Amino acid sequence: MTTDVAVTQGVTCRNLIKDFGTGDARVRALRGVDVEILPGELTLLVGPSGCGKTTLISILAATLEPTGGEVVVLGNDLVHLSKREKGIFRAQNVGFVFQQFNLLPSLTAAENVAVPLVINGYSKGEALAQATEVLISVGLEDKVHAFPLQLSGGQQQRVAIARALVHKPRLLVCDEPTSAIDARTGHAIMTLIREVALQPDRVTVVVTHDQRVFDFADRIVTLEDGRVAGDQSLEPKVESHARVDAPARPLGR
Amino acid sequence: MTWIALKMLTGDRGKYFAIIFGVTFASLLITEQSGIFCGVMLRTTSQIRDIEGVDIWVMNSNVRYIDDLKAISDDDVFRVRGVPGIAWAVSLYRGSGQAQLSSGNYQGLILIGIDDATLVGAPTKMIVGKIGDLQNADAIVVDEAGYRQMWPGEPLKTGKVIEMNDCRAVIVGIYKSSQTFMTMPVVYTRFSQAVFFVPAVRRLMPFVLAKCKPGSSVEEVAKRIHEQTGLQALSKQGFMNLTMMYYLKHTGIPINIGTTVLLGFLVGCAIAGQTFYLFTVENLKQFGTLKAMGMSDSRLVRMILTQALLVGGIGYGLGVGLATIYGIVAQRSMPLLAFFLPWQVVAGTGVAVLFISLIASVLSIHRVLVLEPAMVFQGGA
Image (tube, rainbow over all chains, first blue to last red; front, top):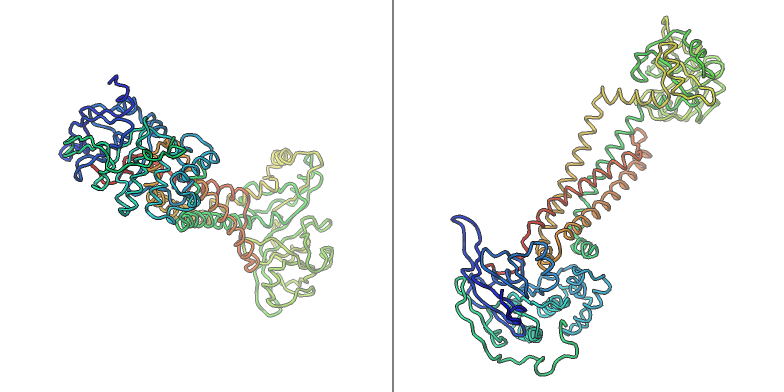
């Protein structure tokens, strides 16, 4: 394991391999991925369909077992964590933003956002109070009691982002966060994610096909056929509000 | 966590009500059929229950149920009286008779002859007339249902005359009885009168009714009677149990009604299990999201069990409630319907519904436990 502090607090993958199926039906999704992702920057994982992007973030988020190689996330060697430890790791350290939002339709926006806190042992009252604060910080103060079906796609994704941040995770994984919403809303969502990503101890990984999102990236890692085919550090073309005018209460902090 | 489970469950009203409907249907069917079964079984003992104030029934040792009439010696009543712990003992005749009505029609009936002097065992719920009038010559009392069977549509009144074994019998009273298993009129008369209403036989008395002295143990005295007389002596409840056991063992009632109860249980399992499983499958993405966010398997299991037990509890309450209403309403409009709901049926249905709920949740729990949290990510590899 590396001794570099920044890398220890980030993500390190060494020769990461993932196979699906067995025997003749075996498919190798990751063929030895080596990558390091640092906190405090927005990293995009891009590549054609089937290149292994989703498999890679699933492993980074401790939701999928790798077949081989090393993966150290926030100082935790995921390969050697038990199933139960991985659950605790996810509950405490990982925030998820999904392509289809994955909000629980029978819960209000505040209740959805409160779920990670409840999983971490907060009482319902405490969790709802904190969830409401975070919803206000993402501009949804008038939608606290709305149900997901009463919200637009962009509003639902904001709720999902609030849910991903409410328990102050150090790893934020976003799977195609803009693909189910229109371009203008997608821009607003990426602005929000970028603000969050710039927290110095937070690792943010976004999987995307959407080339308009590239403008927000500090770094773009390109996967092809289960391998890293490109790794490019960039100067973002889109400035976040955080850099221009930081909010009074940092998001997710 | 419970509130999330309940909100998930009640969020989709259609599925929520469908699951409750399944459990309610099963609960209703099980309770209603079991209630009918208990009602039928209870009717087999109605003539034992209706004879009040008696501790012990004494009979031939081979008697298996109330209608299994095996006459004992007339002297046996004296032998029973001589057993320590007995306060008094009287003869009871019970047999079948045939009445010829004034219209010329014949009607089969159950004839009960009670002690002439004391009228022990006489009905207590008189609707018309007085039981003391049984002391009159040729007097009989008949149950309300039997009266209506013999004289349909006519008002209840004394003075009607029938013939039994070519002997005149006058109705001096009408009483309210428990519904009998056989739908025949039940006629009471004095023992000395009963011998004229049936063809002559050498021995007539099938039962001796006995009362224990205060402070005596009924079971102990019954045991003593058996030891001293060789006769079968049973407490009232013991004789009822013997009768019910006979019907349970030797009639198709348990199999016929039990099959319906079993079908209700299986249909309930199928409907509730399938609906609940479909509910889980359709919410698999939500469970997967919770799992991805770090919710432990044990908490997910508790959530599913909470959901299953809630719908089980509601379905159980509705089913038992509807069965009770059915029983009350149906018995008012159809007096012949046998329905009795003891607490054992209510508790048994509860156990069955609990089992249905657990069966329904087991499949769902398995499905959620094997769920890979990575399924929440779209797009695949």
